[in-house]
Image 1 (cartoon, rainbow, N blue to C red):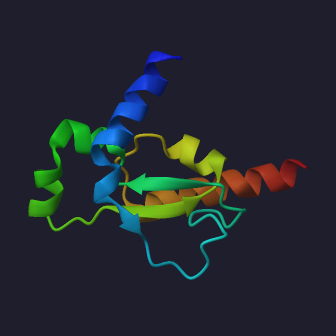
Image 2 (image 1 turned 90 degrees about the vertical axis):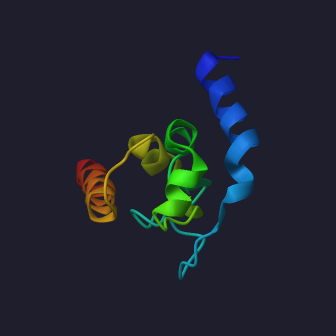
Amino acid sequence: MKSSDLKRRNRLRRFNHLYSRAKVADTTKCFYCFDVATVDDHVPCLEAVEYLGSEYFYNEGISFELFPSCTECNALLGSSYRDWETIKTLCRDRKSTRLNSS
């Protein structure tokens, strides 16, 4: 198993209990690009919670939510600290590019 996989598993074990499902209209579609959702996106990302600590997010009033995501958007976002509109734009642009090249 790769080191990055072990780190992720450790973060999930330590922090996944903090997260609840985001209230979205359609949980079967990716929140970012509207493709079929196959994974959950942790917002804020697990790496940020490990680095900054959960108290930071609680103190800032930031909730821990799981958003439905396609694998591509989740990988594209990775440990991103971008704002929501930038994230959505990146993912929709990626989808548009992919669809136009097909």
